[in-house]
Image: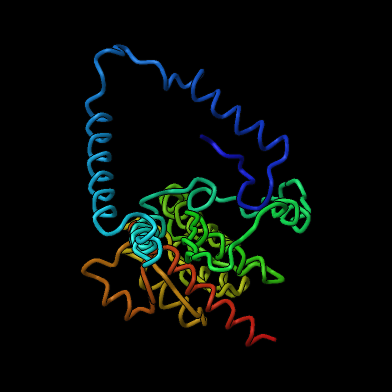
Length: 298
């Protein structure tokens, strides 16, 4: 089932519900997900995964029943602990973007406008729903189960950015020709935009002084060197030194330091941005620095 895209912020209106219905129709009628060449032949991959899921679920069910049933498992917190463990693993995959969320952790739109949702009188709704309901004085109470959303950590980062009068800026100190640095610069821009940062891409080139001047005219709290490996080898460290000498507070390199990591750090690079790292932690630290810089400037 595909839920309306506004479920996280309120009750979906007619437009949101229509979009959700249409997406399902598109998947069924235009993407042909329901059409197979040989319905009787089955699908080994899906059947094997379904069997594994059923077997694991049966093991968990038997374990719960052997220890007093679902009520006991809820009361002593075992179910909550199981959910917390599963969420912890999934949260890491989302933070490192092994599990991508389109529009959240991938291809974000930092200039999006608020969407419309239906309003509801929650107090009146709660009062109406309680009519005729009697709660026994000695009724057992269960601790609430945790509720999570895949995008909640990235959404919290966006909220931090929105709390600023002006979005914190990131300057991409691009190295070399446009054709050479565009891939890394685009990837890096998307990373920082997932946290709500305003990303400014430099003009490129190899003149360390010119690139440092570009940063000084902007004054961004975060600077990221972006370029091709060959340009890093020839010019990257000189540019890093120039940026640090100009006063860049925090400088990162888009890519892995590899066997040159110590040399990069000696040149002034504070960290490395590459696939597989914890993006949420990286952006959270960047927001901390932006908050500190804003506080110092007040």
